[in-house]
Amino acid sequence: MTTDDATPARHHKIVVDHLYKVFGADPEATIRRAEAGESKDDIYAETRSVAAVADVSFTVEPGEIFVVMGLSGSGKSTLIRCLNRLIEPTRGAIRLDGEDVVSLSAEALRELRAHKLSMVFQHFALFPHKTVGENVEFGLKVRGVAPDERRDKARRALAQVGLEAYAEVPPDNLSGGMQQRVGLARGLAVDPDIMLMDEPFSALDPLIRRDMQEELLALQARLHMTIIFITHDLHEALRVGDRIAIMKDGRFVQTGTPEQIVAAPADDYVAAFTRDVDRGRVFRAGRLAKSAPAVTPDEAPARARRRCEEAGLSAIHVVDADGVPQGILTRDELANDEGPGLGERMRRDFPVAGADQELIGLYGACAEGLPIAVLDEAGRLHGTLEPLRVFALLAGNGDGAASTREPAPAKEA
Image (cartoon, rainbow, N blue to C red; front, side):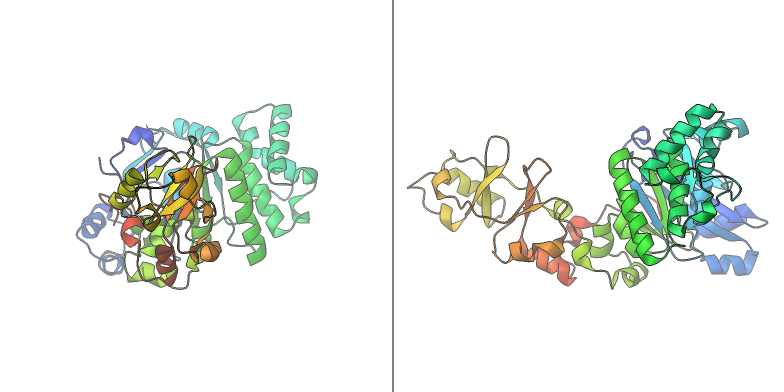
């Protein structure tokens, strides 16, 4: 197993293993040079061949947005086109739900593209002589879906992106942002398992681009698609990605969550991208919270104190039978084994945050000096977050890097 963790491949939606794409006369010689560690520029100078994708391995989980971010020429668009074989890989494995894409026949590949994959491009690629609805129906028509059914699916897809009223108008009548929504609806209409998005919003004005990012995240919250998203914009990557791969010269130089990329850049190249990032809007309480013990109101003070000390906590939360925090007790307040029980001692006014809360909104909570209770969607205790750790992360001094860095993959660079 050579992918980026030890989970069996069948549990992943997408597995890419040691993928290469070489443009040039002698691919095998180019691959040998790349394996030996020669740079992309040096290889080209000697061979006039380019390893556009060089030994890339990664996995994508069901329902995940996996972002590949890199500058122009980094290989990211070549990579995404290899996944559906719009560009034929030179070497390596691509498996979708365990199916080997590289070995598929032409007919099986057409079936895969028709039923499992959709692709949204940077340029809208809409047919100007067809209506908006007919553009959205196109993939269904190719698939052989009956007219009434494909019209119904197209209108539902347009409704998902807020354009149902525009089904009968030509796409040239729409703004750039609306045209990109049509492109997104066309991808959604075929009910894909996997959506491939190649710089889908980069041609849009900044405000429209942000709206489209919000639209995508809202759709994802409802549909739980598996998405590979290509961008050259780190802020976009941080905003939409569950995980991000930073690509340079055909290779992945770092893969991780937005917090991991920003808190612990793997090298100077990644650090240069993250230097001006607003950390307060990247880090979220749920991903940084540490699992911590809690006690119930009827537990003995001595037991609560021991649990607090063993976990190295400055305070411990008191929860009810459902795990919902009711109060908090500091070590000092637990020092005396005699006296009232925990339910009477605990402070009922204590800082809390939702798991999705941005750190920029936690300054007030941190000012109290108590560990912040981070709650899940049901209001249960998800974990705790120490104020000093919040301030250190926002200051960018590297605190928390060890706890936010992903284990290094077996082979990604």
